[in-house]
Length: 212
Image (cartoon, rainbow, N blue to C red; front, top):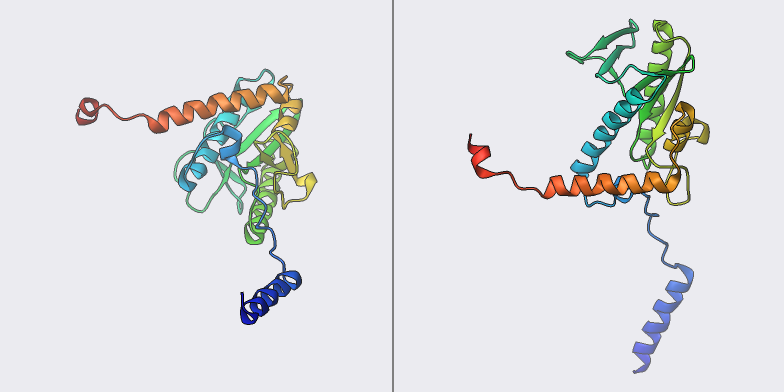
């Protein structure tokens, strides 16, 4: 190499010394990792809603738990009136609402906690607004609220911008309602769910059935 080349190489090396590459944003453990499936962004959003239905169904089938959200529930945060199903315009959806051991819990499901600042604020405000409205409604006693994550428990691979005391992990929910399920068995069932998701996404409709 000639002197000009050497000078330029050294110059760039000095630049790298002074301005090293930073690591890209840490990949957050997400719903695709939980179920070990490949999902598009749209499918991941849909999966979050299906997890909400799933948890409500599990709570409904758990002894001594009264789950109010086996059907869609909406609340008017101005009048504190509850509506089951129907037109939800202007109302707030209540993801999960259940009673156990004389206590009521409202949980706002977030299958992905890795939210930007604006969405964190919006979610926090929504939870507070609905909680206050449910308590004013008076039909559920004193309501405790949390943001529910379907992941087992907090770890370094999960980005969580919310205060720790505002989040309930799925293991904590199981403990509250008396569901005995260790971490390894929960992971196993999530993998089986993922296999079912993959099978359904890859299945092709029967043309004759489609044409009927």
